[in-house]
Image (cartoon, rainbow, N blue to C red):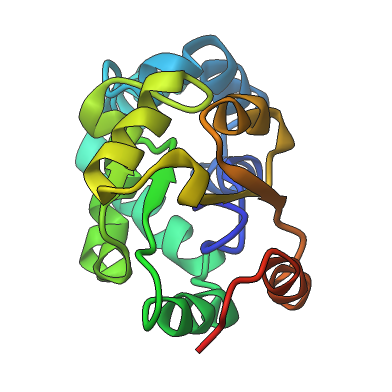
Length: 194
């Protein structure tokens, strides 16, 4: 989702949040690096990060206030890619369009409020199920929930390091660069865009 349907990946979001909170961006980047999988798997929350930030920098803001800054900043810089969503709508006329995403709990809440998940069925969100890309189980779950075979799937992501597992399940893969190129790549696979 990040870097495909959403215009930004996590790094620029954390950079902007650090600037808004007036804390060193390195703290958020290091926290992410040290706890990436726990955040993806829902074992740690953004509230945990906010509490760590509050303690580390003796911020006068309450955790809820830090989360409010986080949400406002996330929404400000992480726009929905209208072209990508328009493509999803067209694809849904002929195909099931599912979502597999490594996400942090608070970002799920924010995106649920803006009704992003209404575009996809099924939605397989890492922090809700405790597994993440590139673990094979998340792909298997998406295939099962979509009631399709791996060979019938096209997996699109901006991070090619996830492709080998998807391919091992029979999925075709496309590295996302932009919507225009994605349309060309999908048509090359015989996908009808209605």
